[in-house]
Length: 412
Image (cartoon, rainbow, N blue to C red; front, side, top):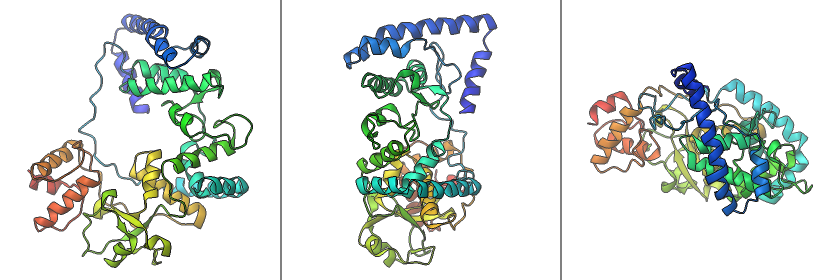
């Protein structure tokens, strides 16, 4: 976030002082005209009253400190920086100190809210430790400060950001929240990205998933712990959480078993994976009910990092935040809270050195040879990883299922 804010400030600082002031003042005038014109018209078409519109935008002005802004007349930044690393080393993401702290607090809060969590699990089928883990990751168990007016953030980004249409839709959703009496504009506080409350829902997610679990007549994800926790559970349940199933297991894949078998489209019974020689790193067997159900191989760093068999619930966690590392973080944290588990046993190896432009070139070379790498974008998703593994095996190389400098030279 700071990097984007710095870039925006640098862009504006390059203008002469007088021009900068005039430019910002002119943009502010355009912003107010946009609110009074196009935006208000769209809001009214969506059932928002004049009273709600007037109240929501009273005193609202552009927030120039937000990241990812594209003022009118300026050139949007490139869609991706091809000089950036494709896959940053996850070591910092899985900070052991942070995870231990979140787990300790999570266990205490799980005990404190045990009765509420039991009611929530009975209602939605989602384990309490998973709910607590998301609560901790998203808002520090509701303790994180939410310093921004959500209306101001959403309006600013709807008017001048790289994702204007998305934020415009979320702004209309926020107005529906106000129109429906869920909250006033002055109390709708959120993050710099417009995420709201303890679960960090965007307004559209609030409208779809927030629940009044404490039955006080309001879906309050800012101040009510029961509403916040139940809303997280409702989100996961409605996205397909399978009651009674785990999220996944860290495993060891024998050298004789190809790592190029990952992905939700290659699901098979976990017993079938076990029959190939795959085993849990803990030394324990897979739970009996899981053996009969489908699981999927996941090797986010190929042979260079922890390896997993995950269940469909892993992909439900990704609905909350579309990142393998996020879902793994939540799964590991939930296990720590529930069972006292520790860090993944396998270390993250020498990854994070490839540039996106290099991975992009490899993807294009693989596509030219008939491989399905998924989106050709310089990011090594599971289809790219398994295509690399297949190519390595067919060319007499040990399959690592991950891009490397040596492969870049061969794949031309």
